[in-house]
Image (cartoon, rainbow, N blue to C red):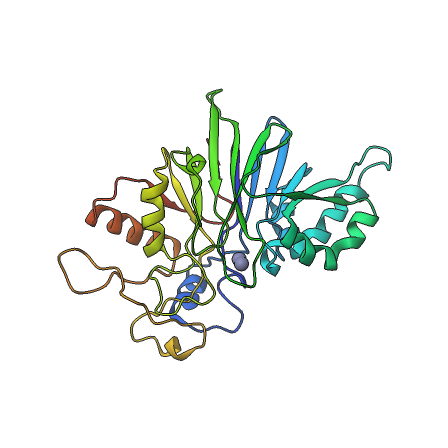
Length: 309
Ligand SMILES: [Zn+2]
Ligand SMILES: [Zn+2]
């Protein structure tokens, strides 16, 4: 199974428009960007798209994605579904009799929101909505998929993560876990424990005092990684710029959140530096794992990264 990280950024992408915070400044200086989070899985000529946000056109064209066999939508927030209209082009370039509507899998609650906007895509035969239930496996081509409930606040009642089983490059079965945006996995199903690869949200480095939007910080992700016990790597996605960098004048911005109790080395009083660019993110994560004796491999994903499992 090949994983392509089409985008690894938060709801508005980073650097954000008109933002002069230390994180966005650092990313601009390094010519880095994170588009809205979306993942492509490929196995035996089957392409499965996970989430389809406002950057879908650019993401699919720069990665030369020739076809999409199905789409999984994790929840009803704009940055995870508003790109569905871009799928129209996959119909337009084929003779009429060859194309069949692309199945779009989503929960009932998510469908109620997404369908209000994109019912016409179904009427025009571009997509077909397929309702899924948390805790119930379904099959799509070579993939077996297990959606599970995630708690992502009251504005995302349909939110789910996905456990995806397919064939690895060694020929053995592999299991990939994608959490989507979340603050908690209620009644975490046993199926999720011990999978091969995890893709997890890390919106902030430090858990904020007030986590109203219900996102996952790297600080809290550590606890989930320990519970999930992945056999291989965990990839961090959906990074934003909401951490406060000490002394940054932009800390007064509405999006900057006060940390509850920032991550620190076991011996020491100074919190870890807030990462801005890709190298800093990975260095900070590695340092935290080493200092706190956490025996799991965590890689900070970046846009266009491709990984074979
Ligand atoms: Zn999101
Ligand atoms: Zn969301």
